[in-house]
Each structure stands twice: as C-alpha cells, then as structure tokens.
Amino acid sequence: MAITVSLQALLEGKQVASSKLSSKLVDELMTEGLLIVDAHGSKKSYRARNIEALQQYLMDKDESYRVLEVNSASSRASMATKTGNSKLVTVRSCPGFPVNSYEPIECQLDNEPFSVNPMKGCFLFVTEWEKFTIPNDITVIGIENMENFRMIRQTREFIEKYLRAHGLPIKALFVSRYPQSTDLRKWLTSIPNHYLHFGDFDLAGIHIFLSEFQQYLGSSHSSFLIPEDIASRLKFGSSKRFNEQYNRYNGISSDIPELQELINLIMHYRKGYDQEGYINL
Image (cartoon, rainbow, N blue to C red):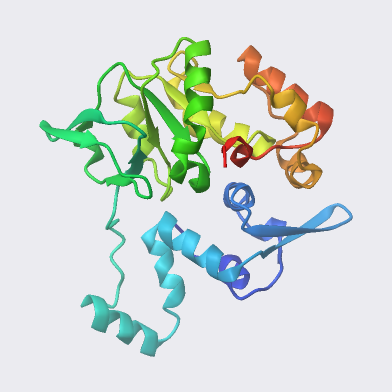
C-alpha cells in the first residue's frame, strides 16, 4: 500500500480534500466509520474521527502501513533495534481470519481433525486457511460487525429461523473478514459451501457484499441475509448513515431481486439499519 502525504495528514488530525484521497480507500474508511465528511457546496473534505483508531485499522489492514510511524532517523534506528532491520518487511505476520460457532463443528486442518467449538467469550483464528476444510453441510455466515461476531449466541434463534426459511443447512460456521485481507474470500471460493453475508442494512453494507464477495462467488454460491421485518426496522433507522453514504453509493443496484428490493427500501426510507439491532440482549 502506498503511503501518501494525504494519508499522513489524516493521521495528524488535518482535513484532506476528497480529490487528494483514493476513492477506494475513502469508501473503506467511511464504511468503517473512521472518517468524518465535511461538505462545502460541491466540494468535500475528510478528517479522522479517531486518529488512534484510524492508525490501528490501517496497521491491521496491511503491515506496510506501519512505516507511517517511522518518520525520522531515530525512529528508524528504533525499528531496527526491535526488528533487526531498518526496512520493515512487508510479509504479513498473521494471515487468515477468525472463526466462531455456537455448537461443535468437526473440521480438518492440514488433514488432521480440528473441532471448532470455542467457549462463550472467545473465538478461534485460522492462520493456515489453505489447509482448513469444513463439512459440506455447513452454512458459512460472514459477520461484518465484530460485536455481532462475538455475540453469535445472542442471535442463534434469529439465524436458525432464517436458515430454515431459506432452505440452507442449519449448522453454521461464522467467519469475519478482519483483519481485512483477501484470505477469507479466497477460502470461500475454494469450498462448495453456501456463503451467507450478514452485514449492515445500508448502501455501504450492500456494496461490501457485492464488491468483496458476490462478484467472486456468484449468486448461486452466496446471498445477503435480509430479515423479513427489515422494512419496519428501516423506518426507525439512521438518516445520518444514509446521508453520509448516498453520494458515493446512490447508483448501487443488483440483479438479485431480493437484494434490489432491499436497496429500494433503503432509498424509499432514506435510512440505514445496523445489524447489531438483531442481537438479543
């Protein structure tokens, strides 16, 4: 990843014009709630909502971003002392993705038995994902928000009801795309299991599914979780979230009828709804 002057400015708490930032990176950071947009007529600028959170997100996304911390000879010397090399090696130290379940799932890792059965309050992280295999009769559910990922037991009744209604295997393995990389997507394309995407019910959430998953997996191999009561929930959703996303995603569409209907509902109510609303506290 390129380290730009504009990105450094954001990390220093400065405002940066939209024309100075990569639109793809802006999409990402806005989706994660890491940027605040300031509109001045037709012109926009961005600033970090929380500098530490932005820096941590970038470092988790790609270790090459850690050179943002190395700005002087003294800091390079410090890095050399810690790593043995003043040039930070950009090999990822922790590939893979988190997995979770609310019941035991007997999988395999490097052709050895591997049970995914984390206790409440924790989850597992699969690093050698190329050697990770699961039974065919499992629905893989991607959870966008970490709060939902941690609290899957509080959504079990809702999830199982949805899977039954849509004819999908009831037993579920939950996965997360954090830290962001293509590992999860590559793994999903290598297995026959159906992928169900559980994200926020807003334009950015749909964009993530379409651009990061559906275009690679196909509509027969993937779907977007759309609750039957989403229309009534959108009525009381967030207008602010919709307004922040509208200019960037207002042209979004899908050839999947159910997903296009959700897009139409979001446009009609001009609101978005967070997936955390489905956690049964």
